[in-house]
Length: 496
Ligand code: ATP
Figure 1 (tube, rainbow, N blue to C red):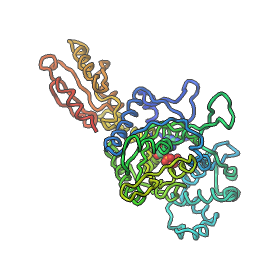
Figure 2: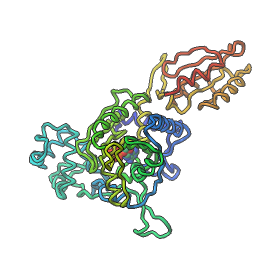
Figure 3: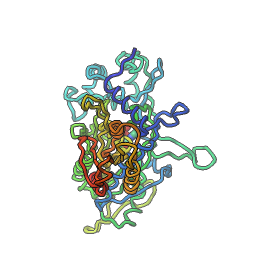
């Protein structure tokens, strides 16, 4: 019988809680689900909105960033100019035996170091490296080895087949060696048609990233918002990628939400801005409660065709570290390409030198859905308190879907009425929840499990002195305050 690892078990518990409590449902579940698509339930949608709000505020409150909401369908030439039609593909291989499909880079990144070294030897990696700046394979980390091997396979049409024939690469699912096909390039963009006729002339794509909506609107925003360079444009929205393998819950899905910001600057300022955005974004995750030891910055060895420098902020998911945000120095690549393809100028005037130039771009590209999952995973804790088990979601109060629960200690003596009236009042300014069913301890547990930071209890003392108990989720400490102060007490503690 297949056994699941502790990290898989942890992920399963998180997925199960997310479903049971209404954070995340499988898309079209009653029809068996749709791979790579998920629905946000009542609590999930609140938490996701809070996450996006935290990001939006951090961007807009600076004063040098403007917002945008571009359409998902764009002119097909956009994706030719951006390089997506030509380059946005992943080499993939199939297993002839069990029909599983893999991305080549994932195959390598999931191999053991020993296996990677054996493959490196067979692929004659040393001689390939002697043409580059990195001289010897022994200097490379496991991740770097996997990246270098992926790029060698991408460049050579026969290398992968040779490695498979030498029985060095097994199918991770069925374990058979020699059964993987040659890599084929698979474009990740979803195609659809504008109008009633389904032919190539009417084909459009669902955007695979939000960034291009910002680039093509650069001039519109610059001129209408009267910003001076350097300034940024930010956007939150859905993106679509026909991912080969969707796995690990919300981590890799076919429809997801991104929070992207492009900061336009003059060449020469780009390197400094890349570093400062890297720090700003890192601190944003920390401010929302990510512990530093669960994050790491992974600089890219292999740069995308447009990038001068790039790196990822990674979070330690139960299955290992994975990217939650990319920070890229895209140079003037995108604006130059759009200028070329559209024939419209993307140049601005330098006020001092009176020279025209095409701005450079520093991009911060975070995943709202992936970030959401990271916060769920980070928050999920099982604890024993006074000999009793509790599951608690330690979310930053700003992210918590419900901020406060109002509980009458017992269902009599006017306590429910008082609690309901307090809850109705709180509901006007924050998400609150009234609960009178079961023992108060169990009601606390139900709130802990969904990350509600505060619970207010109305008891018999409330009836004569108008005071209530407020219990805090993480410390479980209780304070007694006047009922009239509840709103301000909580409001102060749920801000960022
Ligand atoms: P990966 O290497 O994991 O495929 P990427 O480098 O292609 O990601 P970017 O194009 O830089 O990702 O996108 C920026 C952010 O968008 C990522 O950091 C991630 O949070 C999110 N993202 C990208 N692809 C997906 C996806 N398929 N599902 C969920 N989120 C995604």
